[in-house]
Length: 183
Image (cartoon, rainbow, N blue to C red; front, top):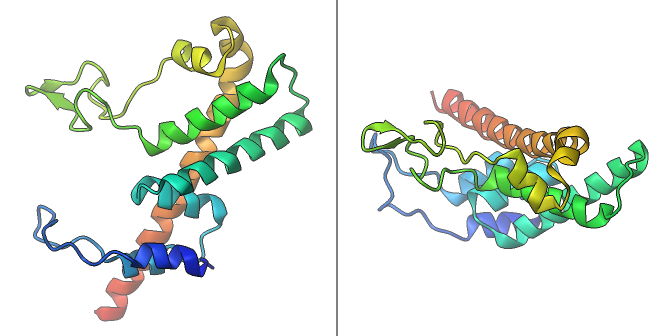
């Protein structure tokens, strides 16, 4: 169950009637979102607040939550690295950032530039991060990243993406229940 503080943050905003989607429907009210997210575990709740509400505190907490998980994984799996603390913290930060802010910076998620597929994201609308860039940011050699850290990094990203799936599933389930209850 969500805490009172979380529900208070979600419910603090009134409906913005100026933001109407293409089909003429108003965005969800914060109170509805709070109801949809109730029952989520800590990780998915933090992701929902960080990604969809742009809550920087929740993003910091999600980073710490992810870093703690990586540290636990390192202990149980016996990872060996010269600067393990820095590497795992950087990996936690990047994995969270990759899921929260994955919009292509060139086409801004539209997938196209001047009616052609965006060359920066290959028309996906998502930011593509090279293995070399990730290796540099977590502080390991490119070859070491590909050999040792790539799978670990992918596991970290997959965990955060799993949180996103949990959030979307909870919201979809709540919306469908609402649709069938009112019908």
